[in-house]
Length: 83
Image 1 (cartoon, one colour):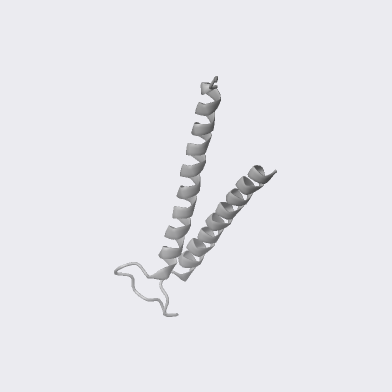
Image 2 (tube, one colour):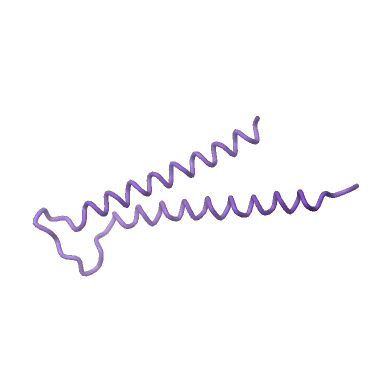
């Protein structure tokens, strides 16, 4: 039995990078959703009664983009396994 150590190392490296990237992307999505959930400590309300609604909407949109990219990456991985 002969093991191709270069190929094994390559698979390990790509798997490690993909895992860290996917977990990091998901974490950014969680952080983006949590930024829109509660106003910052010490923030004062504006005339409309909200604090930074534009920033919260941008954070929420970024979070949804991160989650969408996670779904796309997982779907592509499943496609690669099945195909």
